[in-house]
Image 1: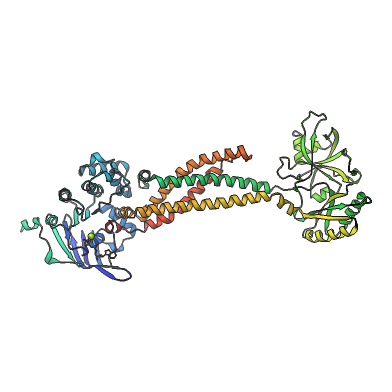
Image 2: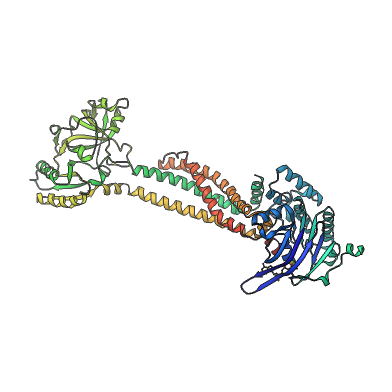
Length: 233
Length: 407
Ligand SMILES: Nc1ncnc2c1ncn2[C@@H]1O[C@H](COP(=O)(O)OP(=O)(O)OP(=O)(O)O)[C@@H](O)[C@H]1O
Ligand SMILES: [Mg+2]
């Protein structure tokens, strides 16, 4: 569903030009759970941003579901993000002034769903992450792990086909990380394609595929062999 | 409508009340002051635009004062008027006791029946001859002008009144509310100590000397000239001749008799300006206050919106990542402003009416016409939306990548 070919991304500031991604050729199939690992500054977030249409690439091509995203307007990209893609961020990115219900509601409103439909989806997805009884709470009243679960609920409520997560467990202790990871695996098993950036090789092991990024390029040699793939061999 | 986000915006706003409340209060106060100020300005403007009835641009007057025992005021008046009226460029001229809008003159009470208990109607009194209508540029609506035989001389200590009078239409209406103006002609009215006068004619318009007076349009002309040493001439000229004649006639008249002086040569335009000076000053102050207040409020709104945009940069990036279009981000801040403005303006409507009541009590201002309030509300909504648009537009330029880039 995602196909990048010779994709480059450079950031130009007054002084330097940073090549965050260089000749990045990579594809993700429907149903994959891909982990992206690599040292800090190697280009993982940049890759994820481009994959999630948060940023434009500089050259090369990127096809999402067969559509060349370079041809899309800002409005069309917003709509695609809203309908096809779910995001999970390292620092949760919940809106502090809104309670959990309203937080999960945010992307649903942009989609223009009916009130009844939105209510149903919000309740369902908060129930799925085990927080149905805390709908009226503010994010600040929750633990980090709970906040990340809300963020997952917010992504799930949109029923995305494609879930992008940038170090979703980066701010969590290992216990919480485990439960978030479990949730992601469950979601993947139900058919959602996931790409997850992580520093944690243990988590990378639990995905179906790993790419290792170094200096903006895929480093085949350093790829972690996931457990599932290993047991298949 | 669900994507208008009224509910969530409102709830988010309630968690950050202080700034919003201050701006709402500012909007309320601005609305209160602006609406009342505009109302007062419009009232004053209308007041200032009331017509005196004169050919204002082409009329001036002067005072002549004779001195010495031998000064023959009757002869001088007759000769002066003949000279002035024969001067090229002069349309007509009269001797008169008082000038419209000048602030000083004579007022009398008129009644439709004799007797001290009868309630009288106030009127200004101008003592004039048969040239008055032409000099005043007044139109005779009914009856007749004075004829030269009607005119008498009033001596310095004489206190009785002539038998005839010409009155303004407004005065006729006040005296005889049920009668048409044609029917008023020939009626007897009573002045001073129940002296009878017959109404000879009715003119369209002429103002009393006092611009703040309720009966400004009540004027009675009596057919008489004054045998006083000090008197005024009111002179109407052909268009464009006024200023030239002011200088030349002053000189001619002064040279005519050595034992008199000419002073206070003034145009009606200047007299009007002087009389309404306070009002125009008030209008200027109110206008400046309004502009300043609107600017301060607009700046307040821009400030609060900018603060909110900066405070929410990450949130805006996240919203963009979750699928908000630029338009949706703009709309968020516009709706937020609309909500704040609405609270301010609801309060503002109450305060506006309250201030108007206070002004009615203390300063005899009239009750606000109802349409000032919706106009003020719409105007301030527009000001608010315009002010909020800049910050909202900047918010929409925040990149969705900010969602992953900042902590
Ligand atoms: N907006 C930007 N302007 C300039 N340079 C940038 C920008 N965003 C990222 N970069 C640079 O691009 C390179 C890749 O950054 P990226 O955030 O993708 O790394 P990362 O692999 O996600 O690192 P980390 O593990 O620390 O999150 C870095 O050198 C970074 O400094
Ligand atoms: Mg990163």
